[in-house]
Amino acid sequence: MKKIIAGNWKMNLGIGDSIELASSLVSELTQSDTITVWIAPSYQALTAVNEITRNTPVEIGAQNVHWETAGAFTGEISIPMLKECGCTFALTGHSERRHVFGETGEIVEKRTRACLAADLTCVLCVGETLSERESQQTENVLEQQLSEILSGISRAEAEKLVIAYEPVWAIGTGKVASIEEITAAHRFIAELVVQHCGEVTVPILYGGSVSPDNFEAIAAVPHVSGALVGGASLSAEKFLKLVTIASNS
Ligand code: PGA
Image 1 (tube, protein in one colour):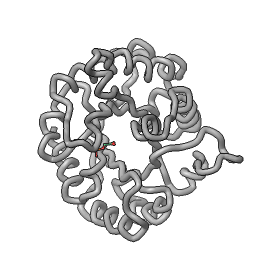
Image 2 (spheres, protein in one colour):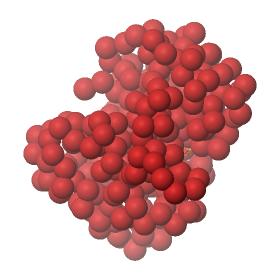
Image 3 (spheres, rainbow, N blue to C red):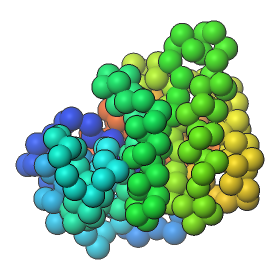
């Protein structure tokens, strides 16, 4: 399976800065059989970044997506709109969407199912809060966030799915989950996938304060297929180092 390094630029970088960062990435990367490189710029920069990344090893995606194709959904963006900008994937259920903007499991499920049905790769983000971890609820939370979605999808749809395990307490905090915690969570998620979908390959990314300093050990963990990177994806140097580490792992 190809390793995936995905950058989530969040609400950072205007069009000019996005073009600059994307240009730095494409100038250093060559097509690879072992690694996939994704970036998720802000919506307004997607079209401009697509001009830079088209026909390069870098694919672009969105940080969220609505399940309807059009209509009265102020502030949302649809799958056809994203495809028109050149997006090949979208994130759903990012912890900031769940915990800062109150997106429920039901909403995340609708967004995820719409992507899979429309043949748009979906990076479904899951993960426990600190209090859930401290009260030994991590596996229950992961099961709750994943079971409903996994139980209803076809094999073809599962092939469009990527799961990102991102402990909420590790996102943007500089606190990385320990190798033991990552090992256990990824194993648990991989087992859930087999239980619900059979022997289909669903990549499982780790996310949460990933940097070139800690990623070598994380990339070597079984069932870790790559990383979803926030802060470090805003630096071409750091992001490219993560790509190199993934290619060598
Ligand atoms: P971080 O963000 O790498 O800055 O912790 C990860 C994410 O939110 O996907």
